[in-house]
Image (cartoon, rainbow, N blue to C red; front, side, top):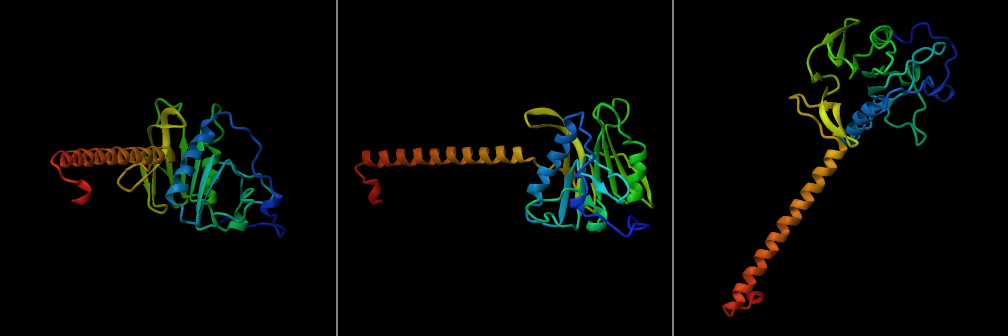
Length: 238
């Protein structure tokens, strides 16, 4: 789709700006996709066939400005080119359209519900997700699935995406010391995947529990040894 009517000269990713240089006006635009990426880095640590971009320009035509989602996921691509990493995501080089795109609506809406919806559909993005924490009467999370070239709005939270092998949804939780609604990845049976912070805390809890158990066993052994000595028995000879 994106290959049609491309000019003869195609610039490389190194020759194109990495974004549109538009600053975010809401910290959530960085934190929410950052959380999703950090979970994937643990969940898919052994996989090298995926890439999650944050505030990175997606180029679909060399004569058009890039479209810059807050986050996007591509499957079947190199996770790392080299130690310099990707400066941008260029479709005529990657040959893979992102399968998942995330927009976190800022203080001033930026075409998330209008022209971007149309652009991502034309590009062939399978899942377009819009999160707007300020909404009260309408759903905060909109998940659009591409069906026959048009997006169909889904109404479940979380929503399972079989092509990715993950679900996407939101619930209240803690991240970076802040308790609020966050977006998370889910299993097919709607179980939320843990964040890195939660895994660290869980690991620390397991260590403490193991230390307590070891201390209890040591205390029991010492009491038993003392009892044997009181009976005139050398515990080391038993």
